[in-house]
Image 1: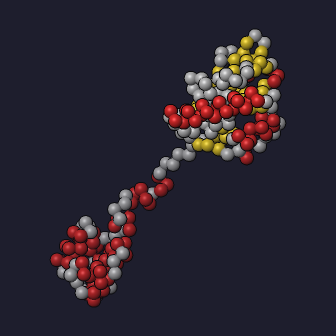
Image 2 (image 1 turned 60 degrees about the vertical axis):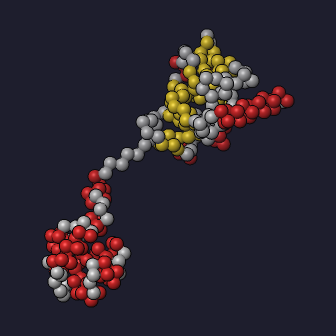
Image 3 (image 1 turned 120 degrees about the vertical axis):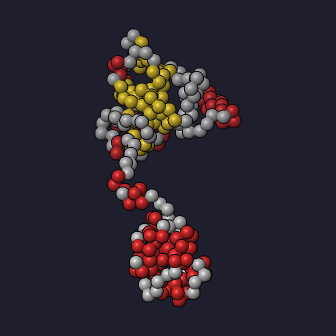
Length: 247
């Protein structure tokens, strides 16, 4: 009993950062008396045991005969902190992300051995990465519509068969080795790619001019589009339009 009591006193002092003198002062003991308790050379008075047990919210029997753990003294849930093998840590799927500086290379080499492993990835809950890519928006071609897209927004799309598109879809497409975010639909014997920006012309292309199409499933805006931000974006849009007219 004395041995466990002494060990528990030392552990209490260590965990709470008390010197022997500090600990002794709290419980109105002499430093030498505390040292004798810790070394098992002297029996504590019942009054002293009660004071220590009450001060640290520890049971008397536990203090005298049990072996206190650090987790117990810090009031942690020992089951959680020591049985880490029982904790289920879920890892979300990694989705390759094509950023602005990679888009040209990606569009050119996607079907000819582009190294997807070198792309950064994003991880989000509830999204399977099968046949999916994330793309960073880098222009204002899809501003002006009901849902507007600005630089640094992220869209995630799943690759679909280009021969099975009938109704209009918001999509990322590789067209003539150029990566484009557009509203896309099939009409008669060609595809029409529409931008929401009034200054960007519709594109009419054949099936052979399209390398791949990803139907957009998820949209993540870089920032909240407050009135102030929308005004800034409108000004940027106006500047871009003026610059295009000067060419």
